[in-house]
Image (cartoon, rainbow, N blue to C red; front, side, top):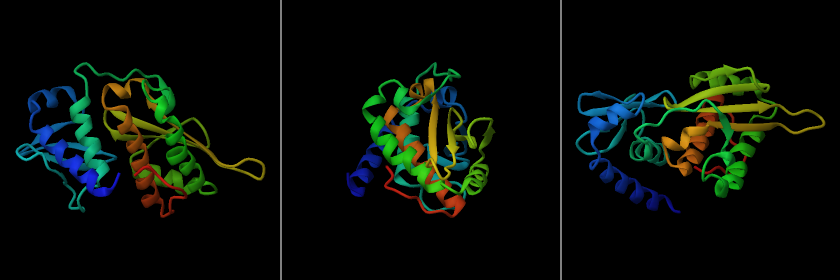
Length: 212
């Protein structure tokens, strides 16, 4: 799909937002709060505001316009989050989430494999980048971190560096109930955007074609 198609889609989501009950959104979505004329939330530690009157999403940190996928991920969180959505505490690879299996091979190719290739031989840079994004160190793998995509949708990145016999490997895990907060396809772009942010924070170029 071309960029202008995504822009059209984003505009449609902006209009959908205006049909939502904003008071209910504030009650059901963890981390969402009201600040003046905006609803505000964090996405990978970056503050974004959704205009209560126009539905437009803006960076509240004086940065450039949020990416298409950042905006779409925020809109789909607001639209799809279920009333009683709660984390389960069980962590699963993407392919094992409800309704995710059709997208599993593409997720492996465009997110997990790209992560492994990009940070092969660069474990220190990956760890420092995860810390910049507010990551919490995990006792799993060579470099394991839990990154706060949204407050209600953390993402776990696990990385094992390679050696002379085996290439680097990675895995990306979600809470079992992540699909109660957002559409399953949005989790692909949430993880892929994390790779973009990690690449920027580490100064390393992504090695491979990503989803976003």
